[in-house]
Image (cartoon, rainbow, N blue to C red; front, side, top):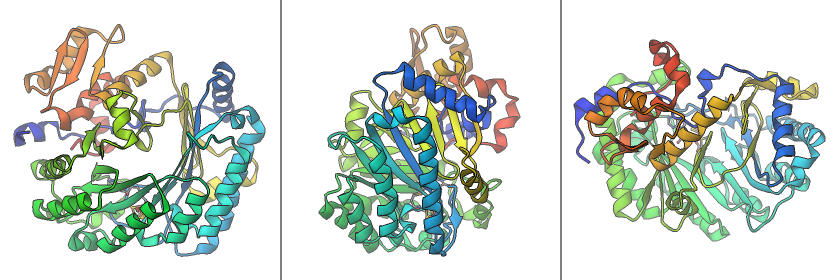
Length: 454
Ligand SMILES: C[S@@+](CC[C@H](N)C(=O)[O-])C[C@H]1O[C@@H](n2cnc3c(N)ncnc32)[C@H](O)[C@@H]1O
Ligand code: SF4
């Protein structure tokens, strides 16, 4: 693709990443605990073929990477492991007692995310996962167990005990292989460490290994990122998430440590993505959706080809389930009609659980209109095209997207809106058309909510 800096700067505005719709800042119909229970109950009783998945959030990290936008608790105190595990188990039991029918349906996916789930020692992980597995139904043929790991804090033993419990996917935080970039983001992770853990994962029989990379970090250059992409290709992960550095210093003040002049932005930043794109696609990877790549043999690539790709709070996935139950501090759950987020502050979360209450922080009850818009945004984000049907006026589309059409970033044929090859970087911008909540909000309100589009 030929990159034009004028076009890039025109569209490099704050827009959502659309891992949910409505996006979190526009949640305005917050459910009470009872509303959330009612939404779950409704789905469980309505849908005889209901599928579900579990996400467990482990917030702890031993050290802080200064780019990080995740919900973390930085500590070296491993005595905090067991009380937290007890809280997770207690939270699960609250749901189990209230919705025993849900736990009788086969669990499709159990995902451990963070923070750093391997902050927990292997035996603590065993205790946690075993407790959950004894209360759910699992069909080993279809079950996916996955974990996010930090290679600096993950041993063979961690991966071995999880493999023995049926886990089959591992996602590694890599970010960048260049030592200077690593130093600047406070994350020294020698290439050999990532290489060794990748080999261990393969030897143990994990069927899918993912690497997370980030472009837009301080002092990344075309040369240094070429090195990162080439090394990635050599190590052959099945999947790669190539994230744009989300700069949100008003939420994550540690990002203020970066010097502005060190941060690649605009055209310079986008060129990093395009360079990695060339190297990865030349090596046989397929670009999936906005920022993911997969080998053709991987199930994510299959799902993309067969239009079965899904997107949720964790990004692109081939596992679409009707209910995603997120447990742990700050976790988000979703059902077809409701989003629900747990308390974000650890002591508040723990004291709720201690009192035997689901730790509701906020959420959103989806109206009929929200549900239709959610479906269309999901289609656009996963397929790069969307059929408007009767949900949107064609004239409205043509007006709202006029500049993108003139800039040859999208086309409208009949009632189908489609991203062009040049439009690839601007999927999030085009999605705003379908985002009635954002469009209704005051124009300048979005400025300090979302990271930049590129
Ligand atoms: C929970 S971490 C992964 C597991 C583990 N904590 C680690 O870092 O290795 C999730 C991923 O989010 C991505 N991430 C975190 N902060 C980000 C930011 N500000 N912009 C873009 N991606 C970010 C990183 O690629 C990171 O690997
Ligand atoms: S990137 Fe991972 S290890 Fe680093 S602070 Fe964030 S969650 Fe923790």
